Length: 285
Image (cartoon, rainbow, N blue to C red; front, side, top):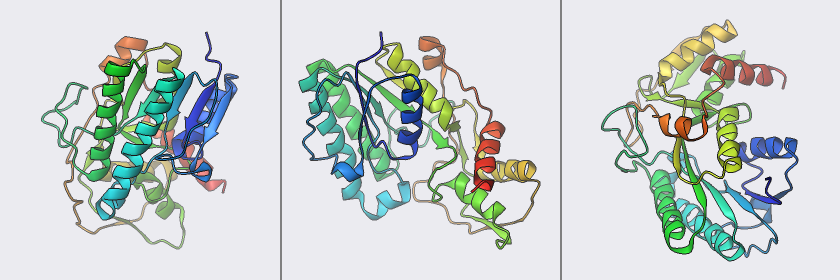
């Protein structure tokens, strides 16, 4: 049975814009909340007859969290608390999007049972928000799914993130080289459409637990660049600043067996297919 009404916070963001289109295509009734509507951490949420909340509003760019950690804790933790209170008072279920909370893996692939050791203020703020979610689940019976996506990529992502930054440099004819900080870190990349599919499937299955969402494989920065070279047919000099980010994670791969077992979800897009879609849309601009 379809929920009567869904609230999406952060609806104008990268994930939110894709989620809205998918929910609209399924004819759900949608209410939006984004930064133009106020501060998610302290705005009084007066929406009525909401059955489910997708909470996406928050701050997410890791380097910025080192510069202004207090802002990340305020928005991400207090914003989640505000939403949890809304869900508690309105008997609404919740999908909460978390992040990398595992830190440097003890081993790969990383399952949901891996010890938690956030490696930056952003991830730590998400972990505190997760803990608050779990407390409300146990003590106030708020039904929720906590989703831990690995490195999300897709068309429309902020160009501060690695893949859109590389593609922009690749397609810019005035740019003679690809500049990156480090070639070595390996990440598990999940295409935005696969993430949205996982979110909606968990929601429609009424499945409330904590789940990793990734591809199950990892690629280094250099491997990402080489794949973009092959897809675009363009090859440029690679300039490496040899700057390692603070508390850098050398390699991480998601164990996605839990969500596969629970709802039979699996990624439908290969990394190359995702890149091709991004590059195609970028060329159309």
